[in-house]
Image 1 (cartoon, rainbow, N blue to C red):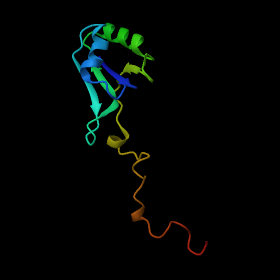
Image 2 (tube, one colour; image 1 turned 30 degrees about the vertical axis):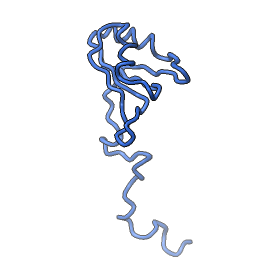
Image 3 (cartoon, rainbow, N blue to C red; image 1 turned 135 degrees about the horizontal axis):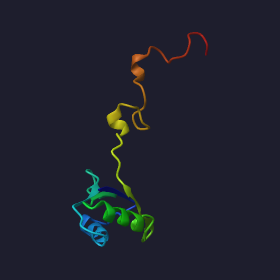
Image 4 (cartoon, rainbow, N blue to C red; image 1 turned 45 degrees about the vertical axis):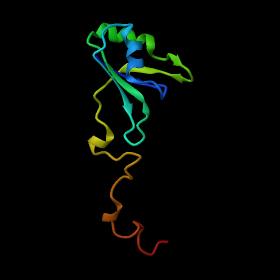
Length: 111
């Protein structure tokens, strides 16, 4: 089962996160998301555990766990398509291409 973990302390690495999950069973993989430009953690990760019952126990126990000033959000990862891959505009894309519309979009002579 693939697990999404958010709210990670920015100094937590793969090995430290794996220690949290190993208490509940076998861990196949741990991947803390790293910012490509800064090389620092983005504060979330994905953990894969082969036994669903162990993964669910880890989720139930670790969700809302406080670590320092952070609170973990731990839940089963979903395969929802992102806004980027779905072709839908998001708050960063600026919506439809405005350069294809003539003028400012206002009716002529009504300013």
